[in-house]
Structure formats: structure tokens, C-alpha cells
Length: 140
Image (tube, rainbow, N blue to C red; front, top):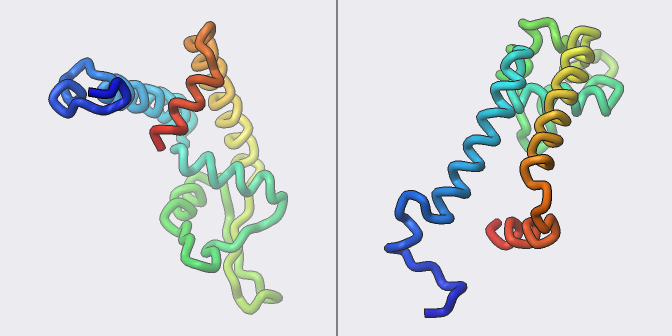
């Protein structure tokens, strides 16, 4: 058997590379979600707050093509992080904007994300980053 071929019997055993990758992905995701949850944010919430912070202006509630953010916006609006408004000049289109509290939470979330990235970099210190990126890209 070629070394690059998968052996289904071996590769589905606990402890195999497949399970190690899945466990690592789950662990990293859980740690990030936990760090953001301490701020009252989800990864999706931070993504939207970051998008709004980068836009520096209101964004449409629903993107052309179907990106509907309504459920997430309702939660963020309830927490005072975003506000929605109807834009009369744009035919009544609903836009969402960051509040000052939302900007502060976005900054705090970005700092948590940066901290998690530094922690991951420390854990991988000494690993050939180019080879790791190549291997991970091949798995996509």
C-alpha cells in the first residue's frame, strides 16, 4: 500500500490522525467560543461586529443573494451592541449599525481572538509552518 493512501481500518481508530485532527479542531473552537462567551459573544456575533466596525457605516440587514442576519441581529440588538434603522432614502431598507458598546465589545473580542492566535502560535513553536499550512490545505 502506498504511504499516502488511507487505511480505513486503521484511520478510524481512536488515536488515529483523523481523530487527532478532529479533536484538535474541536478543542481550539471550544476554547475560542469560551473566551468570547465570557464577553457575551459568539464567533458569529464577533464576525458581524467586526464587519460593522470595518464598514464604519450601517450595513443592510439582508444581503442581496440571501445572507439574512436577522436572528443574530436580534440577539446583538437585545444586548445593545447594534441598532437597526429603516433608511427612508433607500426605499425603506433596514440597515444595522454598531453602537458604542458594540464597538467596545468588538475590540475586546478581537483582543481575545488575537490572544488565542498567540497561544496557538506558541503551541506550534518549532513546527514547520509552511509544511503545516500545505498539509492543512491539502485536507480541504
